[in-house]
Amino acid sequence: MRTTRPLVAIAMGGALVLSACSNGSNSPGADNGSSTGASTQTPGGGTPELGEAGGTVTMAITDDPGNLDPSMTVLQTTRGVGRMAYDSLVRTSPEGEMVPNLATEWEVTPTSVTFTLNPDATCADGTPFTATDAADNISFITDPENASPLLGVMVPPDATASADDEAGTVTVEVSAPNAFLLSNLTSVFMVCRSGLDDRETLAQATAGTGPWVLEEVVPNDSYTLVRNENYHWGPSQEPFEGEGVPDTFVFRVIPNMTTTANLLLNGEINIASVGPGDEERVQAAGLDRYGAASPLGETFFNQGPGHPGADPAVRKALVAATDIEMVTAVGAGAAGQVSTGLVTLEPKVCPGDTVTGNLPAYDVEAANTMLDDAGWVRGADGIREKEGNRLSLKFIFPQRGGDELSAAAELLSQQWREVGAEVSPSTIAATQLNEVIFGSGDWDAGWIPVTVSLPPQLMAFLSGPAVPDGTNFAHIDNETYTTKSAEANAEGDIEAACALWTEAETALIENVDVAPMFDIVASNYLNGVTLEASSGEIDGSSVRSTQ
Figure 1 (cartoon, rainbow, N blue to C red):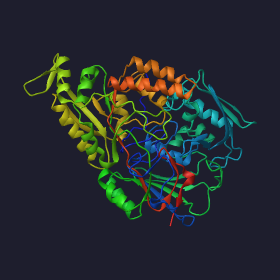
Figure 2 (spheres, rainbow, N blue to C red; figure 1 turned 135 degrees about the vertical axis):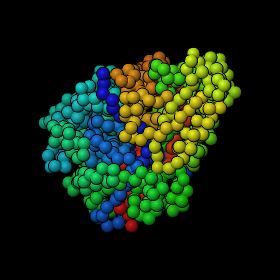
Figure 3 (cartoon, rainbow, N blue to C red; figure 1 turned 30 degrees about the vertical axis):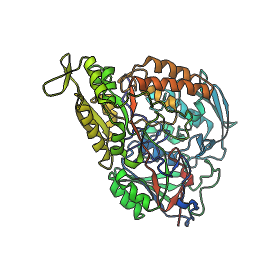
Figure 4 (cartoon, one colour; figure 1 turned 120 degrees about the horizontal axis):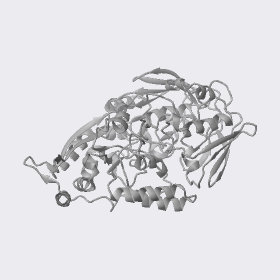
């Protein structure tokens, strides 16, 4: 039996990003002129003037990051903190190109990637970062005994890593062609030897090569990092110093997003997402912004034994009973958009729309007919029953700083009640998610956003062993998805792989194994700071204070 573990970039503070996991509240999105997966844009097209070196940049997050071990989490907030202190071997630029990080060169074959490390890269404690260190990071994840949630999501289960310290190279190999191997590895943060040898210290400290080093932790309040004065690698391969470079970076835990908006506007906070109710006044201030859409309204049904969602007629009827455009307007306002697929982050490796025409259309009469035909009979109180079981659902959804999503969940519940379902909406905090999804199973349906940058990162959650023996939390068993995703994952050509992924994802949506309803595209706003962010992920070495 596998121990429970957290879900991929689950949006508990709004929307998130897995490869992703940049900000701590909402996953930023592209709204009306914001830049998606790109460097920040200045209204009017101007270039911000940098301020003096030193000082502090502060970012608001809605949830406490918890255990900071970068190989033991896929939660957005935690990875957002981790990305500041840890480097990956390579990373993706805002334009979608691979750029250096710890590695300066890389050679790709259909079944392997060989990285040549920057020989000058050192850990924050002054020790060298070696090829063996890099290989051991991969090996820790691939060892099933460690139960890393990155296994099968960012690192293929069959991956092996070997090192040549004299040449400064590390090679990651897989047994079959994998078109996404290099892209996946951009999300693996490299831990230094001190952390590899004593992982318990990583819970509340960092042991990385990144531009920032964790200095102080005040749980549920703040996480303070100081500049790594020796940092001169990363995407720019230049020293992290000079005009505008701050000395300190602080993550402040602020659950209320209206409070965050107020602090952002008065300059006490420099980087933050805001709720839909505050979007208009923050936009009016003309602040710079960046973004990356995330699937806030990604709807799952628990198909485990004894749950109504095990009946495909129930799943299809309830989606047909949902006015998705109205729910989107209430839950995300101007920052929302109807979903077009399971992968939302730009630039998309596999573009396309797998939702339109594949989800049941909004039709209350058709929804009632589906339930009638499936044997769900209305009782005297209007609630349907079948074989003595009431059509009763506990609907879970993310806890956010505002009331918009709660209002949207209540609206969806009303629409489902109209066709004879008894619905109990229930908010869920990030700290509860792991136990509910992978432990108790105390849910029937819900908005459980899983934000990824690549289709293969979804496989472990949408197929394979169900909880508690695996991470298939909704107990999905879709033969077409299982077959096509496996074929796609073993395809060495990107175009051919994407075609197979499209077939696989379409099969899920047609069967309403997952129903992507709406995305959140609210921006991360900046006040007094500029930076670069790819798919919403901040490049910590690009942060600069402005005048």
